[in-house]
Length: 337
Image 1 (cartoon, helix red, strand yellow):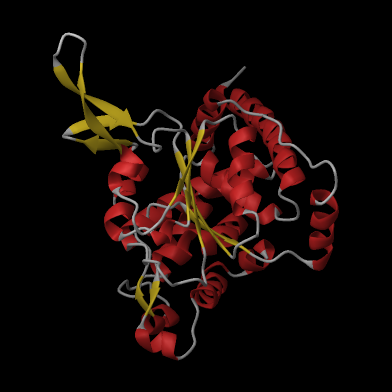
Image 2 (spheres, rainbow, N blue to C red):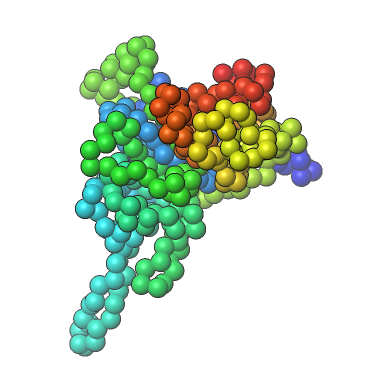
């Protein structure tokens, strides 16, 4: 069997398992297929996701369900203003042995896991939020001068309430950039809410079933990176990212007028990975330009900022991204919608 045939067979097999995983998640997290798709795409790409939504929309249940379905060891941190970096990373304690000798022993914090839920991440101080930076990018933490690796896989799924601002701190741009995607969790439709009522207020509720193991997830992430990406898709990613940077010659007029800064190279890397993952989740062997258009908002929105004048005019990042996608990608934007 040739290398291409082997790759196709591997992608088909993984696609079948992913369909089972999505079905298992959707049995508990009802009617939010787009949210499930984006979160799974982030995990298949080896990255982290920021879930933004109002209380009671199931963000915590989604993370708990994904831990079960993907076979990962989870941990949860409730972020509060008095949370300290040591509460996340761990600390060294001085212990006295039976013979009287004394030595320091490192106690691992909750970050030493495979799937970390950072609940209400914007409630912690910037000092505490910065404790996640090294872990999210380099998959290791440094405590007392010692580098301690986090075993693969390692994913952070953070939640954030968009309206309750009392006692919160804005996430630093450097930390936002480390989230592969921002997933907006919206109110369900009336029909979906009816299904939720019937499924969750009875005697029994649906249970998640494990589909993957940690090792299988690592193998899936490697397979995603082997998927071919056509030159048309690569150029579409470059055109889109560079059109959103107000200082670039390729910048669109709306970007120059409304954006203080645009996405960096990490955004292009995120699009390269997530378009592959989305194609895989939808049973295709390679991504298309429509995948780039569909993922533009979740990948770019947290990596851009409006100018003061644009905010005063009532501009929104979502609307600006939609306009740039339409101008740059044309018909592909309609296909994605």
